[in-house]
Image (cartoon, rainbow, N blue to C red; front, top):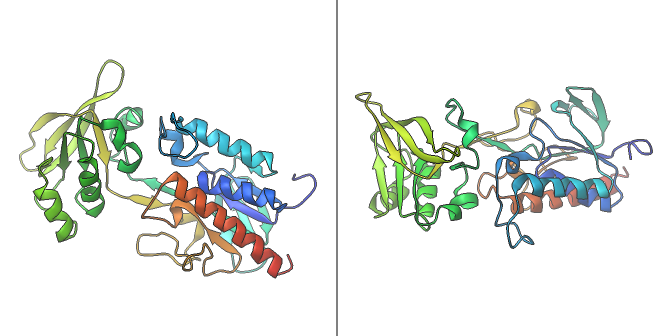
Length: 313
């Protein structure tokens, strides 16, 4: 495609939102260029099995699902480059998009850069991805039916995930580094009153304990008051200390909320800068699902197409 036409839209990010935007733009015959970024395929590439994406009744590996997304976008003409966008100059038109390998000019941009789960940063943590360690209860809770698990955190996200996981687990231990929770009172009351939830106050995770196959079988808890350690037998551990939206490269040019998520217009993906659209986890801190990200990717592509047409571009 790049040998024939200059892109009308640049897509920043390669998760379900970005690839879906490419599919829709390609089918609309809008030349588009997608930059994969530092994590091609997004967060699903560290998920071993996806069972809640429609059309895959037997489930599908996360990386395989994203390869199918990618292939479909390429089929309809999306040009994909393994570059990372480092900045976008929105002060003049066309917009100037700078990557780690060059500069590009384009009338419209779709931001689909996603968000990054905050992990504990323990040595070897990544070895447990898909082997008992997760940052999404809705995605992975089903795999821990009738098992004992832990949730790390003390805010509303952790409380919500702990309560949700009681639908599957026999016991949920909520690990919090302090002796009181930070979440809203109503969520605290619900969690503390739940018969399946047990608190591990004044505790942090010191290390993950694997079995001979590398699967999680326990976490070692460190008491923040007396320094004592103890093993907590669990087959799953959910880190619920928040996500960081990948918006640093935007330099504050787009309107964001207090946590850095992009704010789009009501029921739309348009931002405060005309011609710039945002979709997926970079503007969604509530659902954070592959299916909803793909949906907003479709929306962004359709809105971008219409905006280009209305402006004679």
